[in-house]
Length: 450
Image (cartoon, rainbow, N blue to C red; front, side, top):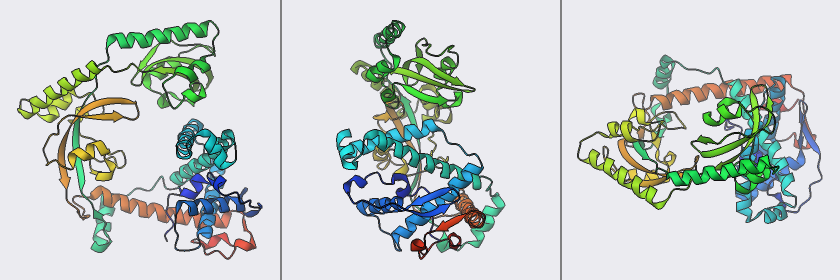
């Protein structure tokens, strides 16, 4: 079967977003019902036209394929209701905000996007929230179904012995690398300037000015400024530690905090509401600016570290431990961990392009010259030294070098089998009806037709 286990299909995600290009009107009708969830003809038509606009191809009947994807999503949504699965609404909102910004950039402006889609921005956002929320629910539900899939080392070895060599994937070159990170030290005067502005905002709010308006005008948090600085209900674990400590200690709605320093910069926080172990807050974030001299000093510092390593007065691992400002890696000699696989090996496309340009021309054991990087999460520039620790040549996967890869393949196969069995079982247990006009589709799963 070619149906992917992760139902995050492009068509479901983007839905009808760009159908403003085509002014064709579809007379809507319900073409299927799964449990309590209807499938609308307009949904299929919109997703189909979106796929055509993007140049997607499909070997079979694309509309039928999209239709089955929608049936599967509705089957998962039905079970998510039964199991009381919930998603983090704040994460949905933030994801939609990022998505809408991408669409505005693609269209050229907010006005052009509204004209393109023939609907106001608030309606676009509302529709996308529904799409994104449903996608998150189906992913969470699917993860629950396969959560107990585990394989032992013995099962991995037996699987490797059984599988033919031709069935094993070709592993492209993989890299292990270490880094030493040096952040420019912010001038004290710049820090005081930021704190002074925040104290002025505190005074303005105390005098009756609206905190949310000030956040829209001045906050440097791109994710929340447009919403008046509001983050939505979050637990302690979802907030930066310094922020959470102050936010959860605020007493009374509307209370404004003292100045809080975090890795993102300096904040003042206003409590909106509290619900059990969650708080809803808004904040104003200001980031001290790095002066040219700050970068010059950081450059001198990292070049000095590079000199010590080059002269073998200190090893790269020791230098990372003593000097690197990357708290996540300095205790491990600066060795980077792949966030996609949690291993220390990276495919070339998984490495930031700025680092890729360095390590592609390096020999194993070589240390780069210092270069500039940008921390996208924090919105900060910093300097790094990189050491190429290892590089593997392209090869057929084997149990010695690629145990984790083979383990993942086996786990994915077991997860897919379990998920497909769940689909077939739920099809029998769930009320499903399909319009006769769509009953002739060739489905991956036969159980839709009853």
